[in-house]
Image (cartoon, rainbow, N blue to C red; front, side, top):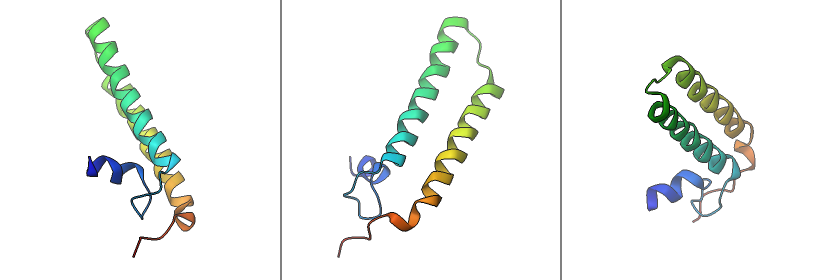
Length: 76
């Protein structure tokens, strides 16, 4: 549970971060969509899956980089 909280909160591990939640939700949705497609058709298009994950990681990574100065500092 601690790992999950660290994934979706800022540097202080208390303040929830919308960008990190968005990253988590969209990644889970993409993986579940690929699994659903594989279950329905029996085929996994690895190129489309890799492109989707690459786009998710690059856009959310850029969003976190752009907002790094606005995050709350660690608790003391």
